[in-house]
Length: 330
Image 1 (cartoon, rainbow, N blue to C red):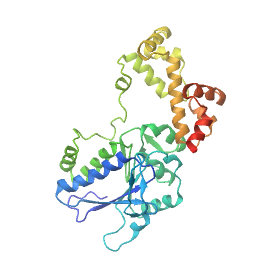
Image 2 (cartoon, rainbow, N blue to C red):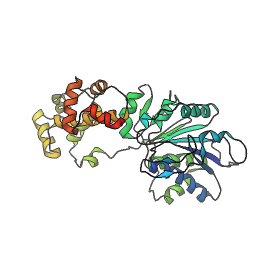
Image 3 (cartoon, helix red, strand yellow):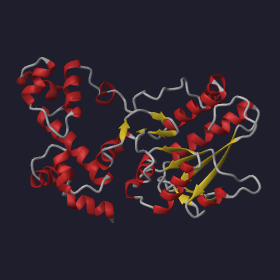
Image 4 (cartoon, rainbow, N blue to C red):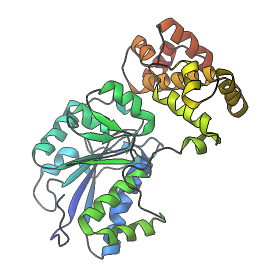
């Protein structure tokens, strides 16, 4: 979309709904442009709900949403229909298994015609599979970050709330969709209007792209010891190549025994067990969000063998990685 404060016609935003899309991300994005129209007193934006074939699409919460038209109908130039200024891919759970050449081809055609492209929640997967994020930086929900990195190692993905890289707009989902739309509204129609939209949504501030997605460790774990926090941060940054407990202790200025007492006191388990659970949690995300072979997932999470990985996984989750994947596919 072009930044123009005296835009002669409304910008057309197409929302391409992928099965199991995130309702909260979709709804907050649509509401942002609706409220912008209301607050400005004129039609700045017009939006259209698209599906591949024009059929209704069910969100991840089970609610079925009626599409206005099939995606290819946006090509028609008669009446009020025209090529959209922006298309946002709305997806959610299970997007890593969404592979549709027709959808990918349509998005590539839009890109060649100059349409801005974006993604809400896990929609970056769809753009990436279409080859539309090569050379771009993107954002995705924190839960899908490791799976995306393993599937698309050459694409720069971040854990920011949203990312604007030239003509690509991606956000991590949830209420971050609102933040991204507020950013777009501010760029096109000024901060005053974006602030009014924010206030109508009862949001006390407009978050910037680089605000964190997740709560800080202190809030997430309910602990405030700085040495414990530093040790956990080092663990989270080194899941594929685990740091030895002695090195962890040295990093935070404690002895190995002191570090162990700290973990037991605040988290109820020794550092080795906590670290193992972090690695297994990442492995579970990869099982759900990638097609990587189980042996590759084991290596990506710091296990020396698939058999050791399988044993540890079963002890924590009650089933083997192979059984877990069978459930996902089914």
